[in-house]
Amino acid sequence: MDASIGGGAVAGSDPKSRQSHPVPPDAWEHPEMRAALATREISSVYRLLRKHGVSQRQIAAMTGQSQSEVSEILKGRQVMAYDVLTRIADGLGVPRGYMGLAYDEATAIKVVGAADGQQAEEDESVKRRRFLAHAAQVTMGAAVFGPESGTWSSGPAKTPAPGRIGMTDVRQVEAATRALRSLDYQYGGGFCRDAVVAQLSWGQQMLESSGTEVVKTRLYVALADLHSLAGWTSFDTGLMDSARGHFANALDLAKQGDNHPLVANVLYRMGRVYLHQDAPNDALKLFQLGQIAAQESGSELAVAVLCANEAWAYAMMGNEEQATKLLGRSKDEFARADLAEAESWVKFFTETDVYAMIGTVHTVLAAKNAEHTKYAIPALTKAVESYDDDMARSKTFMLSALATNHLLEGDLDHGAKVGSKAVDCAEGIKSERVKDRMRPLQVEADRRRNNADARDLADRLNSFYAA
Image (cartoon, rainbow, N blue to C red; front, side, top):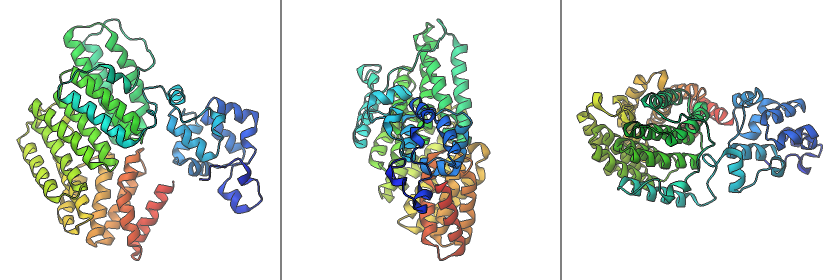
């Protein structure tokens, strides 16, 4: 969108200009609108735009939001995330000064708090190296809660907490984390991230409470897991700096709680962030550090998880031999694992996930060598058949990958049918990752527009991304 909405660019009478920029040029100057902008009451801004004749669809198109998100904001949902506020301002053409927005750390902290604000501007590769160095220090036994920890994020706003805590208080944190994680699996990080961060703002205060050593140790682990979930839901909604900060805090707390499997799990999750950012070399380093922690814990299941993800990184790097080798080791470690005795942090990795990882790795390899579709398709089919509605996001990933493989294999009719199911699932999930993971399907469908079914799928995907 042109960032000059509200200025001279829309003052003319050209109907195409009016259609592209539906906001009246003087809309931002009305006292009521200026007051709403100054207080960042986005619901009021949207309601005022509706009075100016701007539709929900037009607001969604300009801000890059879905119509359902716009509807929720119109109903009163607050917008606090700094990056979302700036995207709305730029999309609508609001002068940033009217909302007090600027590219500086102080403004970001004022809007969302240091725990969830953008880190100071620096190259993403620098941030990755910095996190890798911190992860290596934690994994290899360096002290935690030192000066470096404070550079990730300062503490959230104070919330009253008990002066003394017992095991019941810790179990409440654990139960809340389990419930919120279930929501994340089913509906996506956008559905529950705010609730996760709110839970953290209270749970962190318990670190200042008194309690027995056993209780405090278990609290460290519980809060580490909650920070890990905050990192994962932040990642799922596209807030990469926030994800990195939460994962760094999760590492420190897991180390303080002497829980090697959880350290491995956090490193695996941050590695997945780097895979998503198309940085497989950095992801591989985190997975390898995670494998060290997993081996120290004696958890074959944790090792299986890390090996599978190392295979994914190697596949992205084009190293077919290493990718295949690591997949084989992952299957072997999984076969040896005692699932009943496994730590709760890795119990998510079931036989279904083994098939999902096999299918995912071979899908990456199939992009350069279509022969891999013969390995990807049966594995992905088993994964799709096994995922239920509680794992809607994972099922959507697998449906998208399965459809991509069918298109690569030349089975266009079936590929389009499976791809349509993937879109059906994706439309009910609040996850930026779902959109990103479906891009290869969109590319392959677009390449085959001479086929009616593939063309219909491509058109539907294009509409999905435009919504």
